[in-house]
Image 1 (cartoon, rainbow, N blue to C red):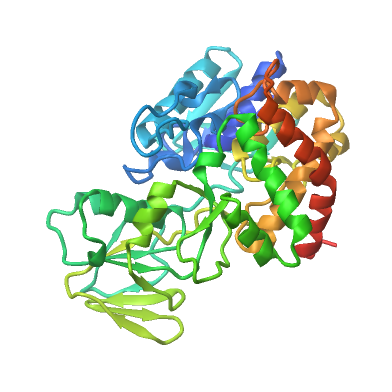
Image 2: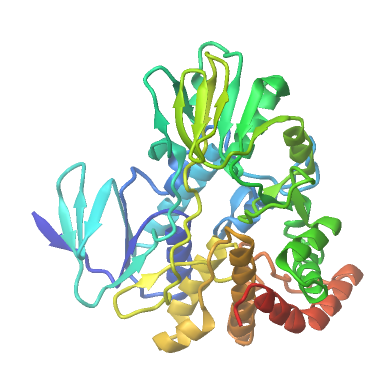
Length: 458
């Protein structure tokens, strides 16, 4: 049996971006009717399947939907990050999205269909077999273009022999007996989380071998905070560093000297710039791991032996547990216009903050009628990977901020929502903020031009 969903929008994906778009669209378009479909059993995207000790790497206020501040804007009261914004845990995030689903359903204008597949304007429940179609007038919203791959849902990107002990980062918490050695595979946030967790559980740093194919740059978490006088100092420093530098490597080194960027090994120049945030206390823990293998990507694992794509091999303990953290988390497909005749394709708009990108896309969709104008106001940016892509992301994000920031209603709305990291709440002022704003006024134009030149954007 097939029925028609009487909706104006079908949002494919109930993760952070899909939920962020729907939340703002419904709040600012009082007649919009929306259906959301997701293959998982609930809203929340990859958080439903992620490793149990995962936390947001950024401030909770920057994540979630515009109408509801994740974790209530609380600050940490104790520990090495006391005074900084809380970073929500997996259970908190999953519960938060369950609450958002309930709130949206209570509007009477939103249906959420989980455990279902989508293809060719048709939704099919994988549980009941029920199917739905949408009318020709319904706009399709692609909210899964950038859906991350996580170890729990992807095979290791290396061959595993039958006699090898390889577990996902999810399963490292379920080991029943401690091995003499852990081998953590990956360079990104998941690998750093795994190393920090193992060290926090009392594992000796000498018992950890870290296979790190690339050296990463990471942002100092203490500066990526919802205080405009603090946060806006980061782009001000970035533009000033760009103006003063003759290469992208020099930009990053200047940012490191300013306390904005961090790297684990100061003797090596990183080539990876996905730039998650990291606490200084975590950095010190990571630096305690001295057995770091840098032979590039792993090709295969067998009992007691790691073999790399460059043909080299490294011996490890026979009972070593290899922890797979090497899924391709952040996706980096080619940019496409957010609005096209076929669909709305959600992507970041302000550099590096996908939830704000989804929210502002929902706001612009609710308040503008011409797709060309919408695309002018919200040009997409990509996630960074290499230094060049990081620079391009920031240049595109700055240009987008200039476009939508010139619209009085968008600027006013953006300053009221916590998911906008650059917001200045109405009535907020301080001498420190005045200084930062003066720096931004002086450096943004020439800084954007300089960074674009260094990134080869022309």
